[in-house]
Structure formats: C-alpha cells, structure tokens
Image (cartoon, rainbow, N blue to C red):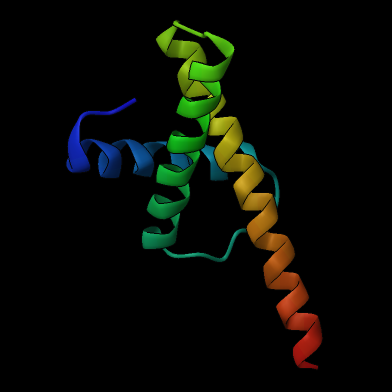
Length: 87
C-alpha cells in the first residue's frame, strides 16, 4: 500500500487518525499507538484488498480505515477487560 518504512508511518498516522475520527466514543491512546493502529490497519486493509482483487486506491484506503476501526474496537475490548480484572 505504501512505499518504505516512512510511507507506512505517515500513512499509518493518517489512517489511525481517520479511524479514531470516524469511530464514535473516547479513545484514550497516544499518538504512537494511533500510528501503530493505523499501520496495522493499512497492512490488514491492503491484504484484504489484494485478496478481494480491489484495484481502486480509494477503496484500498477505505478498507484500511475500516480495518483500523475494527482493530480500535478490539483494543478497547482488551482495555476494558484488563480494567475489570484489576478491580
């Protein structure tokens, strides 16, 4: 999806920020985790687009953002679970 490490960092930041904007609710995470979330979403969305045969760059970005939103929900579930087991 991106070229090189810096491309994935910059694209991951954009995808992570967009995923956090589109998903409702508070997301108490820092900018490094946002970039990591975006990179993981870009990798997952790019892989999914390849498997589905999607060639449109816009659709690949949409899949990456959706994948990052799913990862954000999963991360929230783990955070809530850890918080409830600590009490």
